[in-house]
Image (cartoon, rainbow, N blue to C red; front, side, top):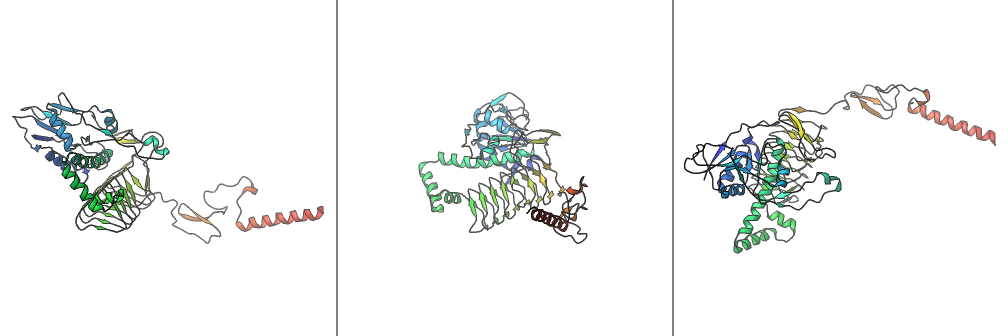
Length: 435
């Protein structure tokens, strides 16, 4: 069966790339679409056929091969409609028509179009086991659904996170489905192969056996890598931890860095002791330890310095983001930040959840508390005000309001000691007179 892709011209901040160049696992959205089409038995063409129904889809929608097979098996024409309430609640925010993803079957001879009647598709989703979270996070936990028939549009930077997380889930679910559909002899062969690689029945050993590791990778013996895909020439440092991730060619995970359920692009780098979960790094991005990173997207060649921080969990209202020029709810309490291509984030910068830093931006923290001048000798403790070192107890310190009472005015250390000694002597004299 043939398929036609319709160009939408979609871009979204802070990256502003053509939507087809959005990163999805180890490639782009266009490459992910092409791979799913081929696996589902579709041939991509530029001219629609006249003699048979064909598939039409937008360049800003991600889907799995299993979803396309379900569309083909539906045996009708029209635009796909999804009615699963849980799935729509999880994927709906910031999409124009989440219940009608931009995928349609078109009748023979008709022009490519996403209009038409509804073509109902059952995604056959099931509930996933909830994660064990601290009670303080309970308000942010959402029902988890999983399956192989997945589809999602991309119209906002937060969708980059959502699509990549769905793609990670779909990869695992498709492998599970293939295993369950295999004949018994193949199941036995697969199980034995995993056990031989694991040489143990312990979960962490089996997790290591499920890795797919490319050529010339350098993995330190103390590193933990489980259920992940590593490209060629990947370097993993001492005591690093990688779980359920896709790591591109030439990427580096430095000593003590931890990452889970993330996509690390080719040539990207997680700095020493960095923690990065549920995030996407475009090729060449460098992410230092900072305050830990969750639900964040880092653009091509972006740089984030040590001690920078991004908030990711709202304890009040749902996170608000900028979408199509307006500030709207993202309908989630758990969302980090997006750092544009080639943007540079300096030390001690703090970014609120849902913030998007434009491409090529250079962001530094306030410098009022950075020491730049030591004007004269200072007795005792000192602090920094407007870049200048000043004595903590000095009555002449800048920005210190004058005292309303002489007895309340802060005194130099030596004066304060003399006052205390004098008070003690007067007390001793009164005691002797009384005796």
